[in-house]
Structure formats: C-alpha cells, structure tokens
Picture 1: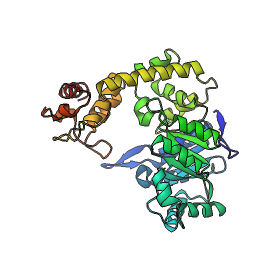
Picture 2: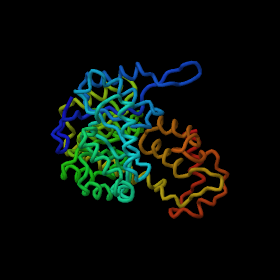
Picture 3: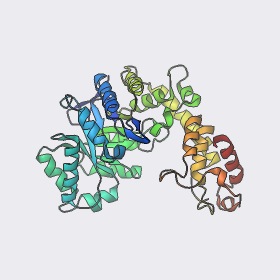
Picture 4: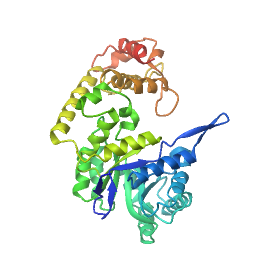
Length: 374
C-alpha cells in the first residue's frame, strides 16, 4: 500500500480509503438486511492490506454503517483513522453536540479522527455553522475535549466556493468529488494542497459508473490496465493534491483489486494523464452534441426526465458504459435520485423540441434511448 502525507496533520494515510456506504446485504426471510459478519470480514481484509482510513456517516446503510464500522474497529482502533460526519440540520451548537455524541455511541469509540460538517456549501457555513453558539463553536469545543481530532468538511457546492471554504482557515481536511467524468473540483484540490489541507476523494469510480465494463474507458490506456475501475482509480491517485481515494467496497474481490491498484508504485505519467484528459474532453464534446443538459426542455407534460434519459444514453453511446446505463435506466422513477419517467413514456407531443436551444430532434433521440436501454 502507498501512503501519503495528509496535509499538515502530520499523519500518513493510505492512498486507498474504505468508504462504508455500500456494505453487503443478505436475505433473511423475505427481507434484505445488512450482513454484519461479511461486512466486518471485508473491512478487516482492507485493513490487512494496509488501508488505514475508513469513512462512514450516520445515514449510510439505513443508519447501520456506523455500528458495523465500530464493531470492525475492535482490535484495530489505534491503527486506523476514523472519519464520520455531522449533518447540519440547524444553527444550534447544542444539536450539533447531540449528533456527535450519538455517533460516538454508535461507533463505540472515545474519539473521531476526522469529523466532517457533512455535505456543506458556502451558504450553510455562513448562515448555520459559523454563527454565535453554533456548530463551529461546538466543534472547536469538542476538539479541545479530545472528542474530535481534526475538523473537516465534505463539499457539495459550486467549485469556486470550495476555495472560499478553504480560506476560512478552520478546516484541516476536505472530502470532495473528483473522477474521470467530473473534474470540476480540480482547481480546488490543488488549492487545498497549497493551503495544507488533506484531500479525500469521494466517487473516484464515479459512484460505480466507471466500475462497469467499458472498452472506451479501458482504451484510454490500451493494454496497460485490466478494468475501467483500475484506470479510474489510477487517474484520481495521479493527482498530486489527492491524499486518499475512497471506494465503497462490498466484496473481498473489490477490496483486493483496489488495494492492488493503490499499491502500484508506478503512477501515471504526466503525459498519460494529459492523454486521458484530452480523450475525455473529446468525449465530453461528443456527448454535448446529443445534449448539453441545459434543462430548457423541461418540464415535460408527461413527466419524462429528458436530461436524465439522455445522460444515461451518453454513458452508453459515448463512454461505452452500457451495463451501468441499462441498470440505471431500469430504475428511473423508483427513487429521488432518478426522478421522472423513462424515454419509452414519451407521447411525442414535441413541446420539448420547441424549447431546445440546440434544436435537437428530442423525440427521435428518446426513441433511440428507449430501444438501446429499455
């Protein structure tokens, strides 16, 4: 396993981190329940292979992830850095403290190494965190008491606001998204490194998208990688600002494959990274020929989620991520992440085409999408 300096904390962390949000389940009667024994076995295998950073959150795995991680840490606590999160529900420092104590109890630990303000944006920080008797004051007090070792934040906002949150000077590490398909935080990652923050990456395999088989993705480094997931992880780890890449691993096989990749001492060269960036930029331009995702076509009178359908079609048509695209297409309309209706529900009224600034033949493309992914 390769290890990296984690900002100015004086800590060395494994290049691969364990993201405990996709732990395995098993059938008990007619119900799917989380498999504690198998989850702990998988986490322990990661620890055995040198992973020393594990990330969880109160809401992961229907609220059971922190409990499982806490059990897995027995016998490993002094060798592993623990990260979890506090959902900022209001501007109360008292409520922040209650949520912290709840996590400590579920994890059954005396302290948390990296405690994140969870999924914040600049507005939340200014209006609900950095306020009198608010969450930031409570976090500083908890750190003074030794309940938190390092104050951190995970980020979901416009990329320019990442720089502003770093400039507040209150954080020691940041958790943000970065992968082959989404490089919008690249400047923020470089800035965090310059300012001495540790950088942890979520979604290095694009939330599972880049883990699906793809000859297009593998072809970015033809003959040099065994899977799409390998090139995705190596691309993220080649960024000099990245300290840890989190992977949500739900099997021993995934742990061992990712550990092999993170243990590879031969990083991608600057030329290889440039070549990958150029190819992915060309793919992005090609995808935009089919749809830029501007949303002007919405709302659809029949509730077809046109941008989502076209995004999935581009994963198939442009990136070769057909297996992933078909799986996600089948789930449209089943949850809040994939709202609306599938392409096959189009009634061909043509209203969307009148609103499209690119004058795309939307009805025709929806028919193609339904045929390819349905």
